[in-house]
Image 1 (cartoon, rainbow, N blue to C red):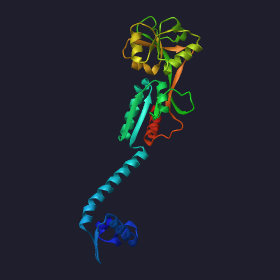
Image 2 (cartoon, rainbow, N blue to C red):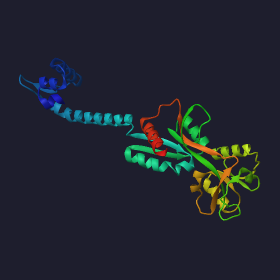
Image 3 (cartoon, rainbow, N blue to C red):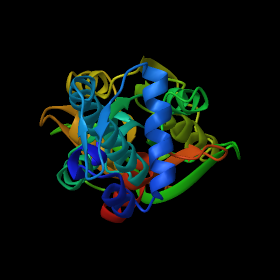
Image 4 (spheres, rainbow, N blue to C red):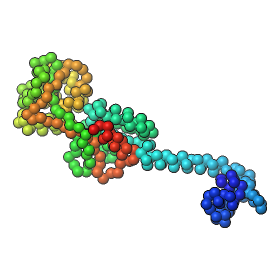
Length: 283
């Protein structure tokens, strides 16, 4: 392509920092491979033959495609393009994560963000199966994961608003032995936390309902069917103003929320960029 532009092997060689004999040999080998003459040569210059003129736009297109592909590849390596698959606990997916995703997209509009909300057990399984790059969840119980803590989320008592239990005063965990208990699903981080707190408080509470969705928990409480213990950050997901919360003490229990990833996996550049951004804005 440069030979056609310069009309001279010697000028092309100087521009490309290639010796004229080497350039001439390359052109000759190309002509032999194609079986056509690409340049007419004389003592002063070279000019494209009709075959060369037919080949030139193809070479220009291939060169442009290569440049474009190389540019996209470089952007992927730099983390400014690509795809990031993030898992999160439902309370986080509806809480702090959307704002972080929005601010990241402003900085990196070419990065596709996929968000999947699951309970903690499903998040760790999905990471092991490499279906997720990152998960915003509670701490893992295996050293195959790396965990960056972000925040503490205190457990609170959730009761019907305006009822006898809506006093605003701190409550002991023993209250769950005295009233119908609405529990979260066994594989959830919330259930693990409530079970641990009740064991420490020596409280035997019988769960009348096992719920997967927080909205269901909220509806049952509003209907006066029971009470529960939830992390404070989840209250926004209970939908409705007919619930109230009280601090839980003896013991005070908190869950840690952070970002988990596989220890033996190198994150894609875009995922690494999102991790750094999220840790910065969420702390």
